[in-house]
Amino acid sequence: MTTATLASLVNHQVRLAARPVGLPTAQNWQFTEEAVAEPADGEVLVQVLALSLDPAMRGWMNEGKSYIPPVELGAVMRAGGIGRVIASRNPAFTVGDVVSGTPGVQDYWRVSAEGAQRGGLVKIDLRLGTVTQWLNVLGMPGMTGYFGLMDVGQPKAGETVLVSGAAGAVGQTVGQLAKVKGCRVVGIAGGQAKCDWVVKELGFDACIDYKARAPEGVQRWDAVREGLKQHCPKGVDIYFDNVGGDILDAALARINRKARIVICGAISQYNNTGAMQGPKNYMSLLVNRARMEGMVVFDYADRYHLAVAEMAGYLKDGRMKSKEDVVEGGVRAFPDTLLKLFNGENFGKLVLKLAD
Ligand code: NAP
Image (cartoon, rainbow, N blue to C red; front, side):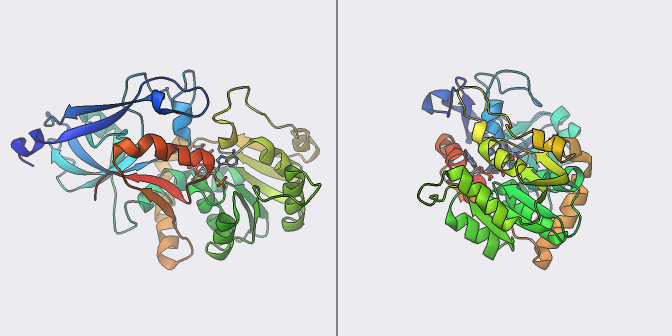
């Protein structure tokens, strides 16, 4: 791209204006515009094609210690994504390369020489999957499902795997992979449409709709526990937890001896204004000599390529599918689109498309 063309580009950005209490609102965001600068020596300029919208973003907006520093007030909101190199002064990248990294919520991403060198910019192979699949099964959520299930859960053929957030990005990978590994798979999801999809399209053995109206005189969580009894008659060997809260408690009440509970996320708690609800049924771990273990996907970065190769094979031979929920509307659509994750409006991996 020529210097004149670059100078005509405008970078639209979304910045964190204030830390939210509860669900994020318009007051938490600021929209800014900047001229696009030519890359300096060693730098790469990327046009962002699609952003990954993740429940973790809610945690990154909070102050305080976590597995990653919080987004600073006034900074461009952190987001993973895929883009195309449009100018490069780094010999490792050429114009036209499709790359993944953490561009943030903006149209153009200027990657420092150091950032590009440290592995912050990775070329992706579109022969293995589409741009949106690289944000889903072949991307961060897929890696989470893969290593959470395989390394922490350690499934054995014939075991029962229960996964919440079953129709979401991580959940769809976990359930399909567990089926490939010969397990019985039961999902938990909000709504009949999501439950039907994971059973009919993804091959789960059953799915419990935790939002379904309970029969007269029965409490909702009792109905979920009944569903677990019905669909996990031999108990639960692995519970892959994406949601925490009452569903975690219901699952704990159904685990087998030596069960593994993979603590991947607790989305039901992310917007709590009070204290986070911890597991009430944790004594079930003692009684069943079971293990509950947290995992963070970034710890497995040096093995991502192995999981990508394996799951790209399953996508190709039809043993796995990858469903994305792609929203258009540019970076200005980011604040409202993010909320879909917290009310269950997303159906599949939530992606914000910025360019073709
Ligand atoms: P997702 O499942 O695609 O989307 C979020 C889903 O969560 C919603 O569609 C909704 O599905 C469900 N949900 C929202 N509020 C809920 C509530 N109160 N109770 C129960 N379910 C609720 O998101 P994802 O990207 O795959 O992430 C899933 C989980 O994995 C999150 O907890 C996330 O933080 C975690 N995660 C962890 C790591 C890690 O390294 N540990 C990495 C990536 C993701 P329904 O319609 O079914 O309710």
